[in-house]
Amino acid sequence: MSRATGKVRWGKPALTGRAVLVVVVAGFFLLVWPLGLGLGALLALAVVVVLLAADVVLAPRPGSIEVTRSFPAMMSLATMADISWTVLNPHRRDYVVLFADELAPSLGASVRRASVHAPAGRPVRVSARLAPTRRGRFTPTELVVRVEGPLGLAARQSTRRMPSELRVYPDFGSRREAELRIERARLLEVGLRSSRSRGGGTDFEQLREYGVDDDSRRIDWAATARADRPIVRTYRAERNQRVICLLDNGRTMAAQVGGVARSEHAIDAVLMLTSVASRMGDMPGLVAFDRSVRAVVPPRSGRGQLARVTDALYDLTPELSQSDYRGAFAEVLGRFQRRAMLCLLTELDEALLDTLLPTLPLIARTHLVMLGSVRDPAVAMWASRPPDDVEGAYRGAAAVGALGRRRELAKLLQARGALVVDAEPGRLAPLLTDTYLRVKASGQL
Image 1: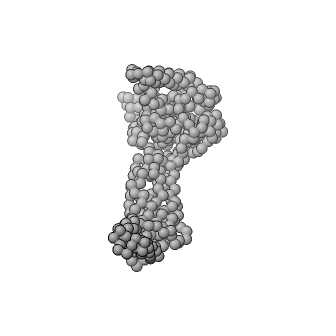
Image 2: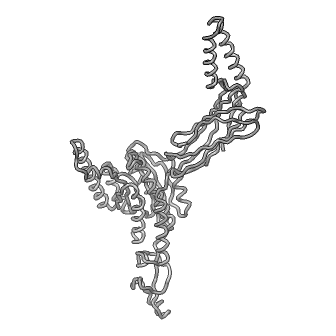
Image 3: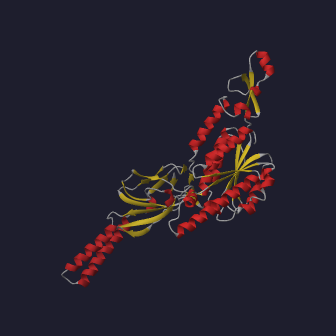
């Protein structure tokens, strides 16, 4: 909740709509005034001025009206929240109070200004809904308050400071997909059909009786002899492995795919991978970079890591500059010497030929590199659609060329040891997570 700060001021005078009506009525009387236009005009002007001055003097100071703002400290793009203003009139008579709040248009507030009848000594509450269209940190600070005089002809108006902060977090659109994969991982842990129960894990877990779906190579013959029945060794995937997401925050991530910036697709993938990896017992981390490193979240285990990664990402916006891949990898290699899966979220752009490709073999010696990118379905549509005119033919040729260069770049990256996931919007996060789970089950990590 935010309250006004600063001195109680007299307030600036302001006219109301009723004052305009009074001027119109006075003009009508001037037309029918029998004593002449000059004297009538002076009398009408004097009456109007006296009424306006009296109303301004009798109106209370805006700072004497208490206004408080209340809204949640945080929310996400996928939700709506309530915001409310409480107006308290401490005077002995009722007044009309108008206020206008400094809310960013991207917060999608259904009401940003209102006029209320404030009864003496009783609070009045005005509510609205917030439906933000952009994530980030919002700091509404100023509130304009206007109090009308008893005649409703004039008012006093002043601006007061009411500093607040609202954090809008990214929409974790793949949350349901993450929960499905975590549930599937739980099934793997109890020994149902899975690659792990057939020997994909590397950490010994326990001995149990042989089942029809078990691999005979996992039979423990010494335990079988003691128990006088087939006993197998069960293994589980290693835990406490590091999965570090490198989020490209450069200019190529500002381009929109499916009406959403590439960075938003990448952030969704980071959140899903972090959620699943932490629930699998691994240690996810984050390095966000553009021309410099913007945020670092050291790899940790536990469910609290998702909140830490979200806090580092929610107000991150793409920088319109070339990303420094060498600097980002130098940061990773300097901080984390232990083997890890490095998941680079970027765009398959030709700039990678000069920036990422030369350094990839050196990084792949120690770490497993996975690159994730979201491709534009509109480009594939242009490449496959028969042209209707010359412009369509040029567009189709450019799309075919762009797709060809994208495939060639993916092959070059794979030849140098990287796993490449190039997915359509909405599929990047699940496919990246599935690749991580396959790598983990196979023991490559």
